[in-house]
Length: 121
Image (tube, rainbow, N blue to C red; front, side, top):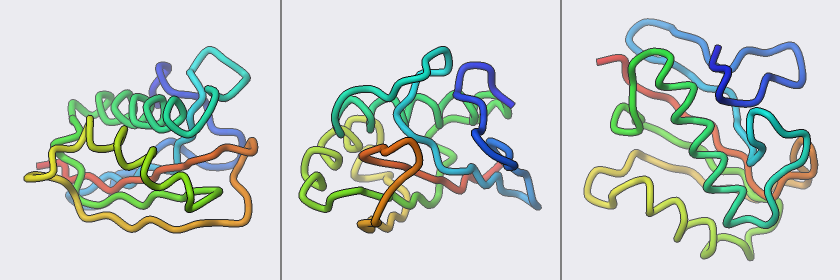
């Protein structure tokens, strides 16, 4: 568990290793030492990915190890803004597979939540 990412708010772990992969639980845009979310989808996307990086770092992994992401948006109208920030972390030429869906509601009323699967290789 990374102390640089928010602690889970329920009975789940930040990530679980199975075989040659680590499966990260969804992260939202809250700093590890804060109770409130960052303001807006752009800042939340940035912080969410920083949280993912922190959890991966516990296994000496980086975003380059990520093979699949799932992005959950509270409003699909935020797609372009989220996608622009996401692209700052994931180079289009080496980007992981991704699904993006709109959901009815996210934990802590977040605008975005992202879960990832990363290779341990």
